[in-house]
Image (tube, rainbow, N blue to C red):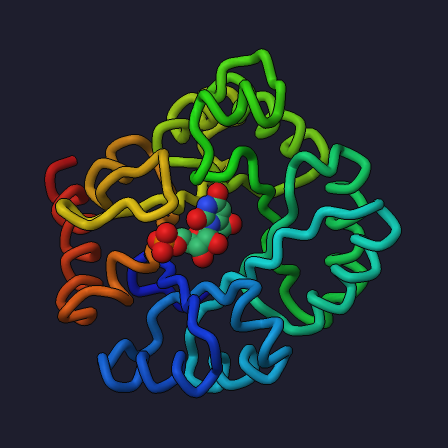
Amino acid sequence: MNMQTPIYLALDFPTGNEAMHFLNQNEMDEIPVKVGMELFYREGPQIIYQLKEKKHPIFLDLKLHDIPNTVNRAMRNLAALDVDIVNVHALGGAKMIEAAKEGLHSGAADAVPKLISVTMLTSMDEHTVQTDLQQPMELAAYARHLAELSKCAGADGVVCSPHEAASIKAACGESFLTVTPGIRLAGSAPNDQHRIATPAAAKKMGADYLVIGRSVTAADNPKQAYNQAVQEWKNDDNNN
Ligand SMILES: O=C(O)c1cc(=O)[nH]c(=O)n1[C@@H]1O[C@H](COP(=O)(O)O)[C@@H](O)[C@H]1O
């Protein structure tokens, strides 16, 4: 994977033109990017081809969550796009995660994309998990349970908040990846996120990859904001 810094920029833009213009205008050459539902549902595979042409490492975040057969066949198609990371919801269960993995292996012509599963969305807090989801376990313990389930089912890692990264690493091993959204530069609005951390704090808490969106895309100077995240990550390297 061509990776300057493991900080994926969430390209949550309405159109491909806007996303490509943003990257171009801010000279964000070859940075890791995340394509989510908003952009993919509009542009389809074409946006992936465009980004690959520009040598961006790509996390395709479509959060599959369906019966195993459907997820298996969908993953076969996604594998052909030759992105670096794809994801599913851990709440789909072990059989679904296994089916996703099998689909990736049978659909990949070249390298098999890493499969990560979303534990508890970073927009949820303890109260929502207990009331909306009627989940009696504490959020962190439940996220860890879903991570262990995902590992047993063959996932390469999970999406979690930075706050759960260390306990998931302790339970699943150092090589089990933790990808953490909910990243905010100091002073940025949390928006709809609840479990947030700065890039430096996320690194300290054990995250392998960060996902950052609006703290950069809505900043007055996006290039400076992204560079600040990179600098926080690198400074922490220097402090270790
Ligand atoms: O799977 C994801 O990427 C994801 C999982 C999660 O728990 N929370 C979460 O925010 N995300 C994604 O990460 C990005 C975060 O964007 P910002 O809140 O703008 O930084 C969005 O594109 C979300 O879809």
